[in-house]
Length: 373
Image (cartoon, rainbow, N blue to C red; front, side):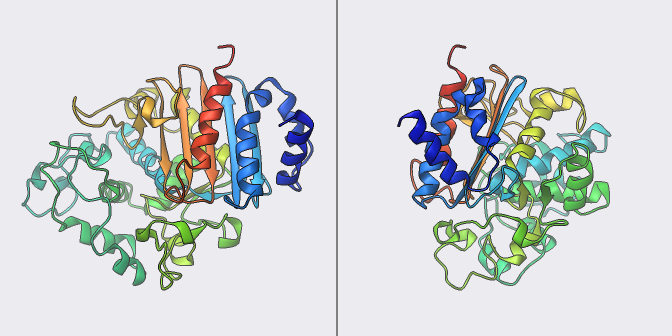
């Protein structure tokens, strides 16, 4: 596509965004991002993706773009599983206060039945997906249909049979993150949503972020294209409108495994806390601890809440990369080797298409950023 045609297409996708959003493509960083912008422009123009935003930082430069129904780069999206490391950041502020240790037994804080080896389960196991708990509960849909609160999910999780003895294998576990968030609530003596707001968002001065909805309303956030969502999120179930990702119930629940709303620039600012170890939320030592691998050889590399290693980013990222993806159609990573952060938020669920436009755009970002490196 010629430059004039590309700018015309991007202008149509950006709608009411100021001309500066297009002019930024003439900056050094903007030129590196043209292919990523083109991918998201075409995906939204075709209505495959109804809304998307892109935010990229490279050392001291940064650029933001919005596409389709997202009329501003600060549009707030449901992050999906990127919520996990966000909420675990709040937990780790309590670690800095020496309120708990990573190898504390979970049974010190929660009434775990002495069965299946769960008496050996530690906080570290919860944060690294080696606890043996399933990703979703067998009664997940039933609980959501009944508009269960987080504590009802916790009670069900405590008695759910383990898949394996803690520490012996890896299996991605949203419910492990839930129990870690419950420990945070008990230690802080406040709901996880309040802790995330005060310990993370307020300290970073984020204005377009909330655990659950916070001070925002459903109209303030971008709807997910729910018809292509995962079954456990209500996708394909016409009876799930009262509990799916777009429901008022789910938006307000603020599930620590998938209920955070943030804008792309806010996500980048949070990731910068770890790449730049600024010490505004957690100490530099804790920031480094969270983005290093804690699992033994033979198991998937995981930090504390974070994916870590080159597989946590996009093709071309370094081994130093850390980040996460969300089944709602999101991806965010930071690569300290090239001092870069990339956040792509879309309304198209991750399972809807392969390859997903978020992945194509993110890979295009890496290629652009590595030009002339």
